[in-house]
Length: 70
Image (cartoon, rainbow, N blue to C red; front, side, top):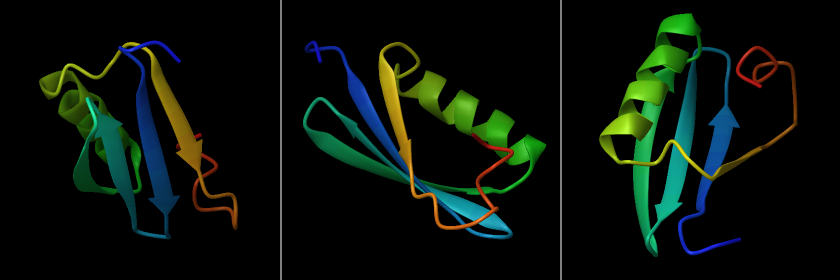
């Protein structure tokens, strides 16, 4: 990864998903509704942190709750 790459960890549950963003060596945390409005809110959240390019998402694949987000 280059120095502008960003890692996004996602943990999805039935109603919400939690994220941990590693950017510039620091963690930022967020929690969103697990629906289309929550997905849109995540995009805005990432844009506000200048983290929309070179994002490497990683999601725990333990059930069906993250399928639509993926």
